[in-house]
Image (tube, rainbow, N blue to C red; front, top):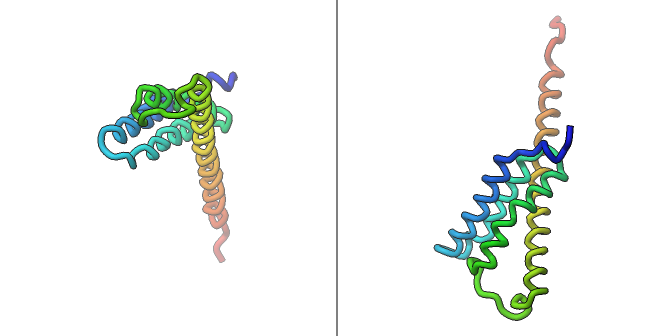
Length: 132
């Protein structure tokens, strides 16, 4: 089966929405909401079954952050970010950070699944023994 077809669309949509919502809440209410937009990218990566897909989906889920950044929801630009190269660099930086956070989410899921399997193995060790 093709790996690129097998991804969780729900986690992508909800992860991107959560990331965008925290950016908007940070702009509207308090600035300390901005870092919490990474929760959406973690969720987008956590919903995937593979580390590579987690990174890809994390990068895709970071596109609302790019759109909101250029609309001015993250503050006004100054200096090098006003040039085309600065805007392209900022776009690439946001995508790379989104891919990394999505990868961390997928890695967390993989570690959790392994821990649950080990726990089940430990629970089965004491069963089916003959009592004397």
